[in-house]
Image (cartoon, rainbow, N blue to C red; front, side, top):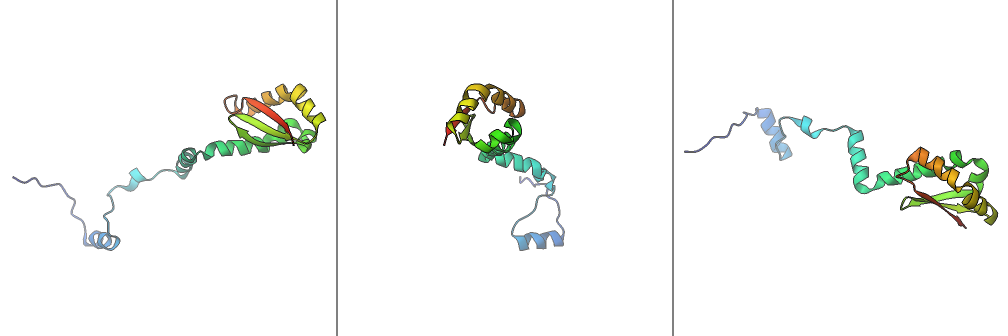
Length: 126
């Protein structure tokens, strides 16, 4: 006793299109469609680029957080292992930033980007 599958009878147009394309298309394509924003977010996360976007936002916000005077003499380079690495031009500015302003700057950056994204700031002369 053979079992018959329940198959939909396809029109000649569907059969011709399937033969021309080489594959049958599923009946309902709504299962395969997702919003572009969801696809981009998951793709960026899979590639590890979502953290890169956060790093670029941190670098861009540096001037707003510390002010123009300090931003002209100290530039953030990158975020490595949740530590913001900042290049400072002069030793005197390095001293002021590392000894006197580090806590306030770190608090502002954590307030803006979250304490789980940035845990410390490393000032380097260079």
